[in-house]
Image (cartoon, one colour):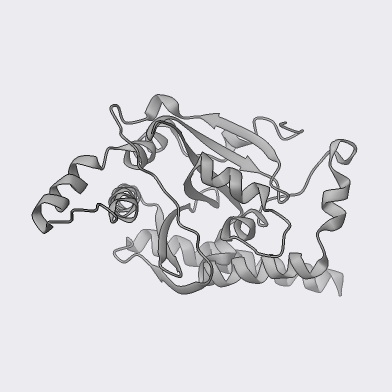
Length: 255
């Protein structure tokens, strides 16, 4: 159910042209590239396909983002490396996944193990209409769990942490390994859906999707993809400085 923040997403997401470029990069077919690799290197089993598909997909997303003054972040958890995209204008961080994987992550929310999606969503706001909320769920989230989420997202984002105001998930919906739809979804910090936007019209046609997200455990490395334009770098620094000054002023006022 979508709560009182309906249509908030329309003020946070990218413009239509940029959304289309990202979605097309996310959903463009990878099968032909993987088949060429298989033939060239004699990879009979095809076990490389899941990771290889994401490597190609993330590469396309990275290229489009950098060409359009977006900040690209790459992060690693165990053997899994993923790319996310930050829009400095709105502070929105875009995470790419498929619906099947997201459903599993949401189902495990609040349990002992903290998936990096659980950490990311902690940056979003809380519920506005408490009468409609599952208060038993909220009460079950201990202070220790919330602290772990905070530490995890700070560890993942590093110096980009002050720049992120909210996290938006770009979700691929599949039937028979084919991407048939894409939605941008905004959740509150308890993984309840606040708002969504249908981006299916931007899906690259004839996509045979083999999207798969591996089960990541520990963040091992953090890198910003190079070749960030000087104007973007300067803007990042200005936003971070402004946020630190605002936090300092709040502390003085509270003091």
